[in-house]
Length: 254
Image (cartoon, rainbow, N blue to C red; front, side):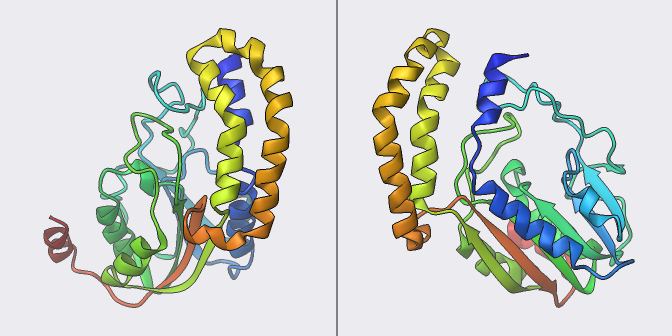
């Protein structure tokens, strides 16, 4: 076992489970037989919750988990089972094919997320639905395929209407103090990544830091509205109201 990758992947935001619950709840409540494409699907973690749907997956297929010695890497990542391997801005699918489009934790890995949004609009049926999630704040991960640390809710409020969507729901999970508590406890492991000998000081650090960690977690419970300052991520549920002229859209992006 690669101890570095084990440590990096063991410490993950507990709030991620909130995002997973939100996505899974949306998927299992989609009417049976509807079509859905999972864009940027990677290892397809939500495929098992779409067995009642006509599910298709897409990914660019270039990340293997090894990456380079920068940021957080998974160590192993297998997207070879996806149905379509293509750039997310040029998916070989006919216009207005899918009732639903699922795109989870992908936008931060795209150099041009707005072009991806234009392509999502193209393959989504009229009155179709979009389930979109991305971090509000994140550490560098999946490098070199990492371009943004996150997106605030105003990114969606400003851009989704421009790309033909009406936002039905915005779900923000985590807050400033929950974010701070994780980074506080994860900090010695980040140091260990650069200097393995620091691992010898891990237990003393935990003993000294634990009261502060507990205090920050209490603040997390007392001040949930601190999500207005910072949060882990945002989940969007939106309805496509109109088609977007791709040529004109690309010009507006430029």
